[in-house]
Image 1 (tube, rainbow, N blue to C red):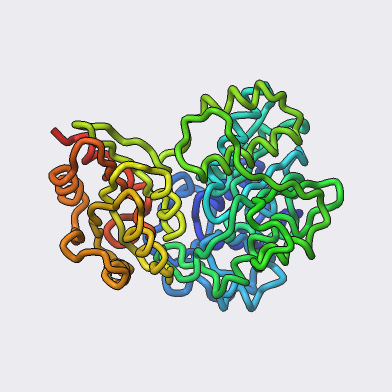
Image 2 (cartoon, helix red, strand yellow):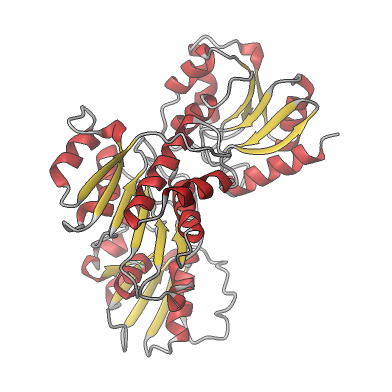
Length: 439
């Protein structure tokens, strides 16, 4: 894409678009840049002295058809009226990255859960094997922050969300879908209100990771969805794939990661490593040394015989159910938060029927919390084992009060964090800070 002399609209000044703007400025591309953002208080750090136009607040999405190209932030809905009027001009930083990237050795990882852990492990395996590798995408690192350093023979690992994928017209050489569950079916983040109207729409977005692949490309997929499957995904997989399909199950390699789901994540990463040609002993070494990511079943502290786990990234009922199955110890479980139109009935049944009991549920206040409480009571969970809190510090200290040696205190809320917290990272960090202050 030639941006010279073009009128460019930056739709949402998030991490990816900010890196793109800095890339354009660094390369002195002669063009007109206008940053469109619904926030009036958008952070202009690093751009204050640059010749850029700003379209903020109420009129942020007006007259977008006057621009030559629109670079959409993942949080900006493709159904936004302003975009609909200028559909043929839409692009994104990720689409442009694929076009300009010096190497075609791109590994794309998506899935409802596990994509960050899996992408990070792939990256660690590649580095352990002595290969030049880069990691970016939804994991919090914008690819345009390192594109100028990439060489033709390097490997790039990208964690890709459904919102990054929904308007993609190119797929990576190696694509992976870790799993597929209900998620993002209602707006949750006030600053990134994008969502999918149905599971079918959500799947169509995910499917772009392989939709544009060719016969010499690879798709790595969880064998739970192996065709012919009654699952919609399995049926779609069998009809749409042009690339070589590799299914993964579970890995039994030694690892610091807990939970059956992480065995699947490791197996997925191993499948990629084998395609790349990494030796088995190198894969084993990297998997054994990998510590996992923050906020994913992270052991925050063991205090007085009680283990405190930060699983703040668990923002769906399915991910919390997976977390519960990772433990044999009695659990004091933190639930609740923002509402993403999830169904909590199965989670409530799991909490009630779990062989090793969930001995107490601490609810964190939020829009979805009353529904969780209702489902727990409907499932037969005892009312006197549920307590609501508006403060994370008081909640943790209450957990400490009722915990006994051998228990696990688990922050795995099944909900997004918005309301009491800015995001899941803040929720997890505050939880860990309080846990570490216990005495």
